[in-house]
Amino acid sequence: MNHMLNSLLTEQPNPQTDHIDELPSAAIMELINREDQRIAELIQPLIPVIAQAADRIVEAFQLGGRLFYVGAGTSGRLGILDASECPPTYGTPPSMVQGIIAGGFRAVKDPVEGAEDSESQGASDLDEHGLNNNDVVVGIAASGRTPYVLGAMKHAREKGAAVISLSNNAGTPMTLLADVSIEAVMGPEVVMGSTRMKAGSAQKMILNMLTTTAMIRLGKVYRNFMVDLNPSNEKLVHRAKRMIHLATGANQTDIEQAFAAAGGHVKTAIVMLMANVDASEAQRRLDLADGFVRTAIAESS
Image 1: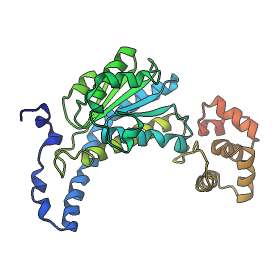
Image 2 (image 1 turned 90 degrees about the horizontal axis):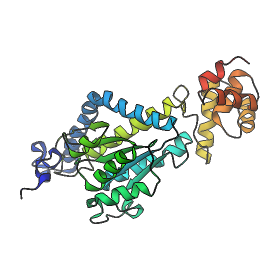
Image 3 (image 1 turned 45 degrees about the vertical axis):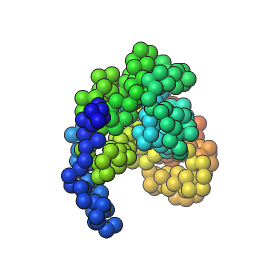
Image 4 (image 1 turned 60 degrees about the horizontal axis):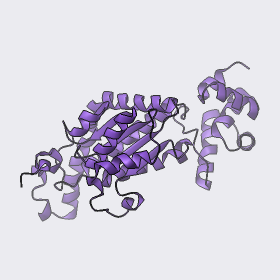
């Protein structure tokens, strides 16, 4: 029984929940909630290192590079979730942020036994995406020692890509491979070893911080509006027009006209209305401003 996983904090029994199996539903949830409340508090001291990771991601994007999340099981699914929500939220191409999971797409829904145990598969899966030295790879694993993730991180280093680790234990092999290491130690889980719980919640919060911060730094947010969203359905069209109203205070008629002239591009419509220019001039200003709305509005005509 002397396995290396036995020493991991995420694999220890939680003394606070030792009798959870004897409790009614509400009391079980009270215990879960009490443990969950600690997650944000434990992440707060990590913000400086999370910011370093976000800066690396911004640098990669500015060089035309891409962000790859690599994980297995829950960690892999969370990476895919964060990646898949960037295009509709920030208008990014699907290639810009990608999630790679051990076992491939089937593993998003169904466990693929043994997939996480191959270092070489982690490396080859990255190669299939044409990894290069402008890219950044974020390895995600609660244990900090998943072979598939380690293989991907080692290969990323060999390729000259920036490497970030996100784990829920301290002093792991992933830390040794990373340019920036985020060790989000949340303590033992409510149910021993069920790292989809506190560890997974911490990972989700940190991934949100990484991509949201990077997108803001790239000019994809004006004030606190997601002005690069892709208005691909009725709800998002309504949200786009409402953002234009909140940002400019314009009336509905002017908003409709600007939105149509801008081809549904929120940034362009805002600059049109705020700077009193037509769509082509608004787009010219945005191009010169690298997409930053405030700069485009302030530019002299």
